[in-house]
Amino acid sequence: LRSCINRPFILFPVSTDKDFTFNRKFRNIVGPCSGLQILRYIHKELKNLYLYDLHLDAISFTKDIIWNWDWRTQSLSNLLRKYDKPETYIYESEKNVDDYCLEIVEQNSDFFETLSKIRAGEIFVEISQKDMLDVNTYPHALSDQNTLIQFSNVLSYSPTFYSLSAIDADLIFLNVLKEMSDDSVFVGMVPFRGWREFTKKDIIINDKLNLPWRQDLYEGYYKSRVRALQYI
Image (cartoon, rainbow, N blue to C red):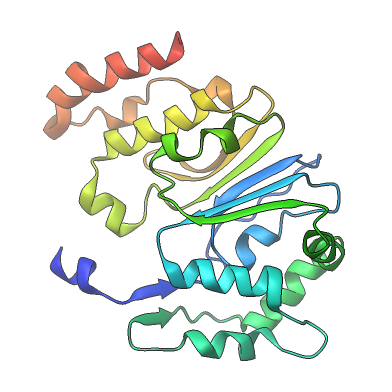
């Protein structure tokens, strides 16, 4: 636990998430400040982009890409150098950040045009320091119709699992589903559910959480909370 808490913040310029493709375009997008990861889903008809994170470097890097990066004259790897410091570890993968950017541009033909529309004030952007685990801090972002909620691995990465039980993480996930519109979609890694797309109909009890060592919590706490969410 101590090594997890005290380790440097990890900045992920290259996605480690499962890629999702959709046969429609979402009016609004909600997600963490994960640099290029969330930007694979933006498009020129987008109305609102809400990006939240606890880590200031993640916020700053995402803001740099959205507002300051001149893709005509500066490589992303060059932009990334300013975040190479002792308190921040830059995640290294087999993919160079510039190669990863080219992949996104190939998959998302609206990428640069959408960035230009954002900078022209035609698409609303909110980037702020908020805990995505606390749904009460951004209800306005969740309740809009036709919203993509890209949760990445917020519910399953190691600091979350050191501070929350899997049952509580699942209840947070179910509360997001409760708050979002019927035509919205949640994507991300959910404990004991996996990397998937979820909709409102997935507010159901997860029997995989019914393990012997958490039997009392499951029976006395989790089941009643899920039933309450189902009937709100």
